[in-house]
Length: 340
Image (cartoon, rainbow, N blue to C red; front, top):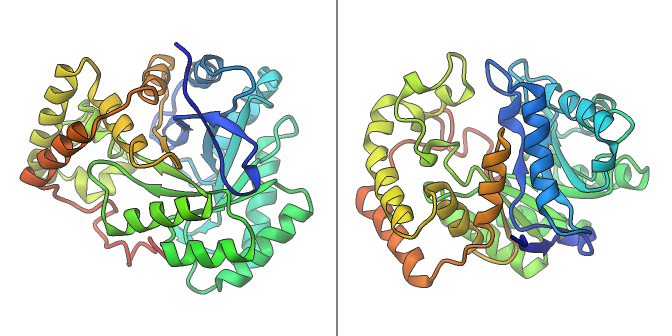
């Protein structure tokens, strides 16, 4: 099957990537990391499935490990050392600037995060795009962008991204220097006014939207039904949607979506990824995957075109039952420094 592709935004407008990206966080940010060769095969499968000249968008972070350290980037360093030919076939985004579980976008923090990330990543692959993981309200957008632009000019990385910002912040940042991508959480469980405004602003400005957690951090995939299905220490146990009472309430939504997907000859994961992709040509679903079979299943969803009626049917299922629990660790978006 020939996979659909799309162009990135901003300063990467000539870069062609797969219609569905690949999030790597849960390869290492779990109590028992994924066996490395399995992780490598999951990455390779996605790259190999794309047409020649198209890059696989990979999403990593300098805190994607249980100790909030660079374990994910160190895993990628070993991947690129073993398969150096994949360096040019992938477009690597790295999030950083989290200190003591809070955003720190001071010039010193951004520079340290970028340099530490590249050090962990090694010499085979250069960071393509860097994103402060959250908006730091102690630092002005002008100062943050000034630091990022300086690092681009120094050759530390090539493109600037933002994460979990609101539409106004995106516009302000883009007016200072072209933003290539904005990463926000979008799923059938997380599609509210802020997401809609960011998508609209990004489409207007020619910025890609990386829609992470399109499967509700794995819950909508149907494998997780209660807290006993997660390893002790799993970061998701801190999220209110993964409290047993909320999962019990939300499970019928998953079951209804699964029935709809089965009727249409696809998995519920593919249905949700296709739904996210249908939100706009600038929206790139960013599901995670630790198995090659799941990577390929996710990519196939990029070739599925949902009708207006099908999207409406999904919306009605969700609105009828109502989603319980926040998308954060029991805190509001404001408290989590989301949508800065």
